[in-house]
Image 1: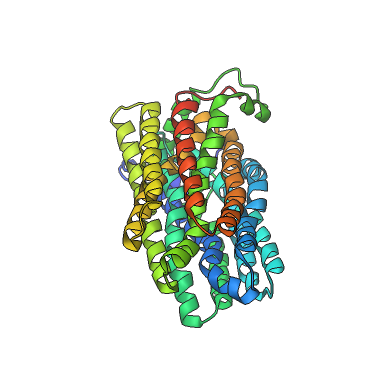
Image 2: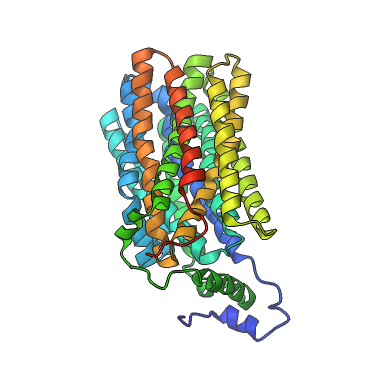
Length: 441
């Protein structure tokens, strides 16, 4: 192991009494990741919130709106595996900080667009810049968290998605309402993101022993867990990343995350328009409803991570915990989103969508899967592969929903598409992935 003990760790090692209690730097890093992913989703959701105004200003219909909402995911999906490989090669710190500054830039310059084509180009830039954040975050989970903490680490990482979507609805709609301009709202969001990237660089480190605030007890605690995890690695690993695609678990991970995101991104990109067009919500009502829905998802995700770690710490197997929680999550979310098609009361619809997101976001635990299936040297690649699957859905779903709405004048078939995605999530997460062993790659 590289000798990277900091002065702080050495001082703590010389004072055994102070080292009895491990520091909690790993949790502070993942709270920062929660903050960064929240900003990530505030920025990507800003277009959905502002779309009614942008559509009117640029005189565009549902099909072009779907194209704009989808365009972010083209480059976001394309850069997932390269982003994960960059995290494996250079470490997550520089990748996370660089990505955050980059997407803040593209968010801000979108304010200068005078038509839908240049706006689409800024969304392509935003997608490319945001792409590495999740694979790099998954690698951080493998580096910093122990086996009984990775559930909470995964859901803190991924919890920024519903939290950012919730806060984005409130913040962007409030900025638009107060400033009277979606353009100024985009500039403020972009500048704030660049500042956050600077703080990410200042605090995140690639290894516990490189962090000045980590004491010897925390470093040893993490290293002991990693040693136990490494003992499960195959002695006959091939070392060829393409060999991962020979295993059913990798394809289950890929398509399971695709189904999850088909449902989540469908709600993220089209629910503001759905609430506005079908149930008559104005921009303030829409912002409040979307906040309630996605904040419910955030609470659900934090609960799911806590429940998974608590259950595993009590002695339950990793496979039993993840299969059970994923099964419950996908069944309830599927039933709730189906019921939205049968209900006309606006309040009941918001309640059902909130229930959908509360249980659906338990699947943030999917971000444990790259660490479960692969060695730490390959977690970034596996995380990029998984998120590529998720964002193939991100590319397709907004376009398909736009075409469905334009062709039928109704959201019914779109909601049925989301229901089918929930059923696919159940099959992939409970039947296809073997959570009990690492792959020999």
